[in-house]
Length: 423
Image (cartoon, rainbow, N blue to C red; front, side, top):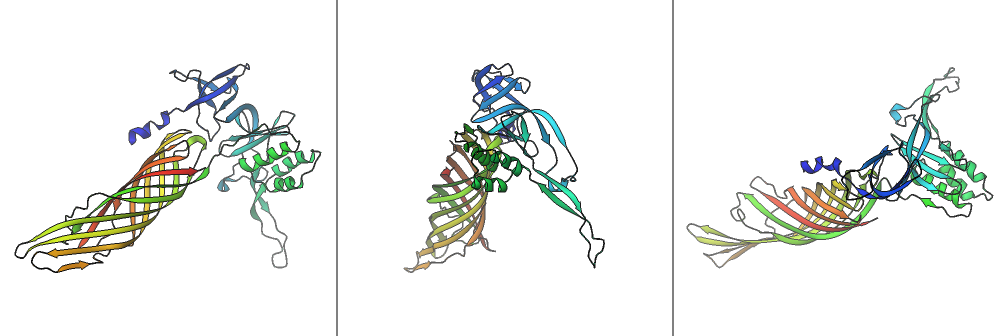
């Protein structure tokens, strides 16, 4: 595991793409695609996918590149650098701007407006109209001092600090709607309420382009974070062992038993930049039966033949943390930990003893007092293929549903799963 983790940073994910050099020549080949969360400052490119060496291009070398549905355009921009962290907000009058040449991710292209994104410590969204200049949509959060008017109880009035949200981008986008020959009231209401996000801004800009009656040439559909609902089925292989003072069950061999299982859940993951971690909330149902026989020899009175049978049904909610060792667009290999809590019922819990010295058969239908709620810790590994099919193996590290002063057990489970993600 340590060796695999150390190789993560060296992974390459070359996919077909093209670059446009600053002299306007176009090169087609393979780009090391990282599905960047923070906009890249350079890319690795090679024209032959089997070649060992790769060229590194920066904004000094290329003006545009495209790979795996993402478009990036070089532009000289001015960025607002005021912090957005509540604990670091600046005063109202503060100005913090920075100019740079950057690769802008293309979100929407159209006849009225183009929309771009740059992400560093916060998102910056730029629009470009027929003037071809880049204008950052203004969204600032600052702190200001307010002096409330006094009254008879407080003639002076106590000043206090208040957070101010300057969402000027609403008016900036509304100006383009007012220029259109047809005023869309529904779109106007949408502009006044949208948040400063890729998804909401992208919809509005695409709608503004559609007002002209022309088709919108390009709208990016890449997501940074997503929820994926999934469901699946599998088989559980399990055994258990007992320890303690119970002479009937101590040392009894239950072997490996198989039972069906189904599961469903939701996964929170990040498409952009192929983030290493994802999290799952899952609920599973399983059923497993154990049967075993034991021969107990008594020195003076012969022997007893023992038969024990246990059937267990589990509803298991769990939290799963996965580390993706291989992270590619259509293939991911992961390993992780699962923290589960079994809600169990035991429809069968019977011990039958046949004594050689008598014809009486003794049977106890509720022989042991198992825990109905008990935790279990698993490790999990598997692969996600074509973003939808999930093949995984789960194995228990620790699990126990019986623990008394005279007796306890150890439950071992392995499960093979096939799941499907509804994207």
